[in-house]
Image (cartoon, rainbow, N blue to C red):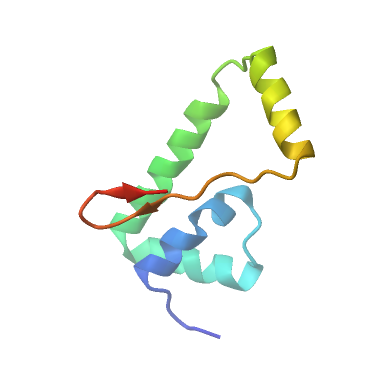
Length: 93
Protein backbone atom coordinates (compact mmCIF):
# COMPACT_ATOMS: atom_id res chain seq x y z
CA UNK A 1 0.00 0.00 0.00
CA UNK A 2 1.14 3.52 -0.79
CA UNK A 3 2.08 5.64 2.19
CA UNK A 4 1.56 8.98 0.43
CA UNK A 5 -0.72 10.04 -2.41
CA UNK A 6 0.29 12.46 -5.13
CA UNK A 7 -2.00 15.33 -6.09
CA UNK A 8 -3.10 13.65 -9.34
CA UNK A 9 -4.25 10.61 -7.35
CA UNK A 10 -6.22 12.78 -4.95
CA UNK A 11 -7.86 14.65 -7.82
CA UNK A 12 -8.84 11.37 -9.50
CA UNK A 13 -10.37 10.13 -6.22
CA UNK A 14 -12.30 13.34 -5.48
CA UNK A 15 -15.69 12.19 -6.78
CA UNK A 16 -15.49 8.88 -4.91
CA UNK A 17 -14.33 10.69 -1.77
CA UNK A 18 -17.35 12.99 -1.88
CA UNK A 19 -19.71 10.10 -2.71
CA UNK A 20 -18.30 8.07 0.16
CA UNK A 21 -17.33 5.19 -2.12
CA UNK A 22 -13.54 5.39 -1.85
CA UNK A 23 -12.01 2.42 -0.02
CA UNK A 24 -11.37 3.12 3.69
CA UNK A 25 -7.58 2.73 3.39
CA UNK A 26 -7.51 5.11 0.40
CA UNK A 27 -9.82 7.54 2.20
CA UNK A 28 -7.37 7.75 5.07
CA UNK A 29 -4.51 8.51 2.66
CA UNK A 30 -6.59 11.18 0.88
CA UNK A 31 -7.49 12.81 4.17
CA UNK A 32 -3.84 12.83 5.24
CA UNK A 33 -2.89 14.41 1.92
CA UNK A 34 -5.57 17.08 2.35
CA UNK A 35 -4.08 18.02 5.72
CA UNK A 36 -0.82 19.05 4.05
CA UNK A 37 -1.91 20.17 0.57
CA UNK A 38 -3.93 23.39 0.38
CA UNK A 39 -4.34 23.07 -3.40
CA UNK A 40 -6.02 19.68 -3.18
CA UNK A 41 -8.10 20.76 -0.20
CA UNK A 42 -9.31 23.72 -2.26
CA UNK A 43 -10.07 21.44 -5.23
CA UNK A 44 -12.17 19.07 -3.09
CA UNK A 45 -14.00 22.03 -1.57
CA UNK A 46 -14.79 23.47 -5.00
CA UNK A 47 -16.09 20.14 -6.28
CA UNK A 48 -18.26 19.74 -3.16
CA UNK A 49 -19.62 23.26 -3.68
CA UNK A 50 -20.30 22.63 -7.36
CA UNK A 51 -22.13 19.40 -6.61
CA UNK A 52 -24.20 21.09 -3.92
CA UNK A 53 -25.11 23.90 -6.29
CA UNK A 54 -26.05 21.54 -9.10
CA UNK A 55 -28.13 19.32 -6.84
CA UNK A 56 -30.14 22.34 -5.68
CA UNK A 57 -31.22 23.21 -9.23
CA UNK A 58 -34.80 22.33 -10.09
CA UNK A 59 -35.19 19.32 -12.33
CA UNK A 60 -36.81 19.78 -15.69
CA UNK A 61 -38.27 16.98 -17.77
CA UNK A 62 -36.65 16.33 -21.12
CA UNK A 63 -38.70 17.38 -24.17
CA UNK A 64 -40.78 14.52 -25.59
CA UNK A 65 -39.01 14.61 -28.98
CA UNK A 66 -35.62 14.10 -27.31
CA UNK A 67 -36.94 11.23 -25.21
CA UNK A 68 -38.34 9.56 -28.33
CA UNK A 69 -35.06 10.06 -30.19
CA UNK A 70 -33.01 8.66 -27.30
CA UNK A 71 -35.35 5.69 -26.90
CA UNK A 72 -35.17 4.93 -30.64
CA UNK A 73 -31.39 5.24 -30.68
CA UNK A 74 -31.00 3.00 -27.64
CA UNK A 75 -33.32 0.38 -29.17
CA UNK A 76 -31.22 0.46 -32.36
CA UNK A 77 -28.04 -0.10 -30.32
CA UNK A 78 -26.60 3.35 -31.01
CA UNK A 79 -23.81 4.67 -28.85
CA UNK A 80 -22.67 8.21 -28.22
CA UNK A 81 -20.12 9.53 -30.72
CA UNK A 82 -16.58 10.00 -29.53
CA UNK A 83 -14.67 13.19 -30.15
CA UNK A 84 -10.91 13.39 -29.94
CA UNK A 85 -9.50 16.73 -28.87
CA UNK A 86 -5.89 17.44 -29.60
CA UNK A 87 -3.73 19.94 -27.70
CA UNK A 88 -4.05 22.50 -30.48
CA UNK A 89 -7.78 22.75 -29.82
CA UNK A 90 -8.93 21.14 -33.08
CA UNK A 91 -11.57 18.42 -32.85
CA UNK A 92 -12.24 15.40 -35.00
CA UNK A 93 -15.18 13.03 -34.89
